[in-house]
Length: 472
Ligand code: NAD
Ligand code: UGA
Image 1 (cartoon, rainbow, N blue to C red):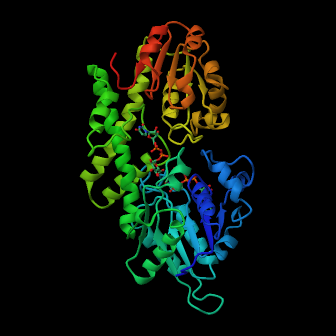
Image 2 (cartoon, protein in one colour):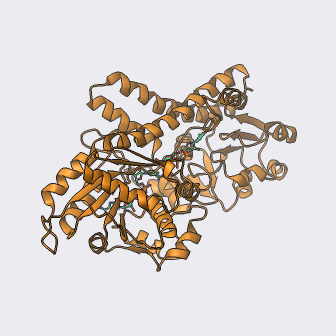
């Protein structure tokens, strides 16, 4: 395999490929980084002042490197040819049809990228799985590469491909911070001389800014599985605390106190124990379903059932919260105005994939509420798209008659009967609740799905408040 990397190609200019390879460009000025995508709109946006991904700190990095050693292009073949190392960072969504529908990862974008590399490569390359994939995907990639590649390069030497697994652990909203200072970088390779050499070449890139002790080399399959496992364990913590929040509400215990008391035990730790309306994001659910499918295909039914429960609990958290809203508003929200604050799946991102707000708003729509939504980063088009039921004729028009999108939180709350907080945006901590109260219908309700408001203060202003995991 190539031992010195001068040019990197990243296939997939999404939430992972874009920020990850921009940081590589920033920290490795001696390496040329070309990020490519089949979607020309995305590439145009990366080449404009209005980047397709919002991440604190990303704009500055792209501005600093673009046109110097960082390039965004739709010419995938040329970028592959030029590079010694190719990241495959394409989407791996849950399959929506066929075998494994609703569980298995759709690997056809990974396979298409692999075939592309095999057919256009004119020199040996290191191929790096950056996408989250099921365990043993690298074996399929190897078979495809071996069966489809040109056997010799321009000088007549045999072409070889080494596959590495290098999963990404960044979280949205803190992507740049996570990339600049990762807890660990995981590199999986085959336990062969060539595999270790390829891992060494990738390690060398990261060592430009990551301490060597944080770079952990494992076998390929451990690396692939560790990514699914890490997300499953993180999501499991949230479902665990959310299950306890239901007990808190029924007993008068306070979930924040319970989380803090448990988290003081160093073996448990205090992070990632914030009770919420439910977790969202493009990966937790997808990766757990993937793990469930993997377990089932291996004949491990009890293991599959165990992880499935994390998703079941998350669905329960969302529906339990929605029910609370309807029941508290005297069992009907038909034609009542409900303000929804926050639509992104967490703060500091414009991403709405699997956002709890979508599920809640769909419940509210079915109850024929009038919904007014405000989110500081999500575009109006995205909200309408997320609210439209796929396959329902003329649903777009119906959505627009039922859902209004506002420019600020106060407008969204005006004349509303209830405010529902779905995302923990910092600005929602500083709202002028007195003014909001004055302009709402009475009794005025606040349903805090993120535990970010001071419930006692709101109550003193006249609000009736429900917070996840806090008793009546
Ligand atoms: P994304 O949908 O934002 O980006 C993927 C991009 O790949 C899209 O722009 C798409 O057009 C492009 N693409 C698809 N097929 C292609 C092909 N054959 N050639 C060129 N481009 C192609 O997805 P993402 O959020 O960046 O996630 C990518 C992978 O990283 C997934 O496997 C995901 O599980 C994993 N991951 C995501 C996150 C996250 O926070 N979003 C974090 C860690 C890991
Ligand atoms: C998650 C992981 O944290 C990353 O390590 C991983 O790389 C990524 O998935 C991925 O593979 O895509 P992300 O989904 O971007 O990152 O964001 P998180 O901070 O993990 O939050 C996920 C969801 O859980 C959000 O809806 C968040 O609000 C919710 N959450 C998080 C809680 O409800 N409580 C918590 O204590 C923490």
